[in-house]
Image 1 (cartoon, helix red, strand yellow):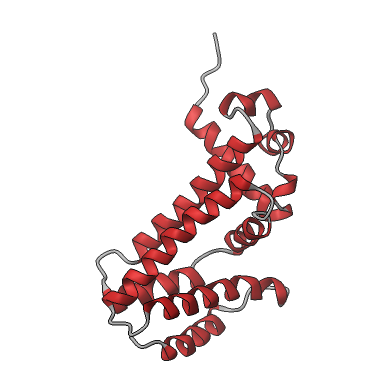
Image 2 (cartoon, helix red, strand yellow):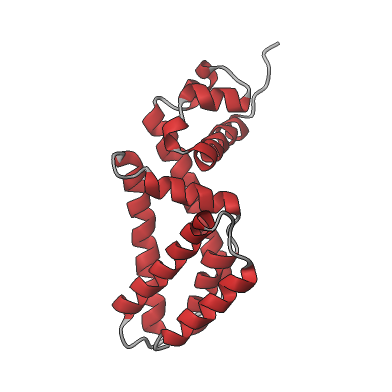
Length: 187
């Protein structure tokens, strides 16, 4: 009798392996063979779910970034204006795990020569920029474009600072810095 395989769970495991490998060692190390080894399967099992390395990367990165968008949506549910803006920025700097930050940094670092990764990062960044600018307008910002840039710079800086310092900054330090940045906004 053939073995029953939960295809959705297997595909999720494959995509989780891509994210884990990229977060630990960068996207250059994500290969079909490395993913197969990570999930304890053969390369033919992986290629059963994806036709190429590009598809493997696109699917896993899209799922990860869509998950991050859903988390941001949940953080702002029922809120609007300044409260929603503060909630989404707090979510971005306080809630992601170190693994999420490592994945994000690996993604940013590997997009220069990789159109698939660049496309997925651009897709997320369009969503982020539109979301922040809309929330700034709702909150009454005098200069939503400039303030959106300031917020994005701050959020990206928090991610990078954890690697520069050797470990992520504490939530208390992040909150203190968020309060300082918040004080510069016109909302």
